[in-house]
Length: 73
Ligand code: SF4
Ligand code: SF4
Image (cartoon, rainbow, N blue to C red; front, top):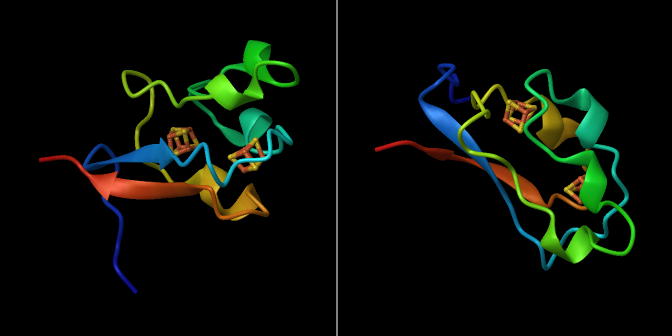
């Protein structure tokens, strides 16, 4: 298993796979996933890359596998 080094990765949300359930939002310790878009505007949900530390917490809570980590270059 690849070891994730914090701040070397950032989370990316695949909006086509996301159903806007909101389960990931409260799991983010950095508040990088906005609350205000759940519901009517969930199709605009996006992770704030300036806040995301790439910890990966949100990924395990997404039932639709809509979030992945990508390495920062
Ligand atoms: S990887 Fe960590 S910091 Fe980034 S959005 Fe997910 S829970 Fe928040
Ligand atoms: S847990 Fe997954 S499906 Fe639910 S809002 Fe977050 S990214 Fe979208």
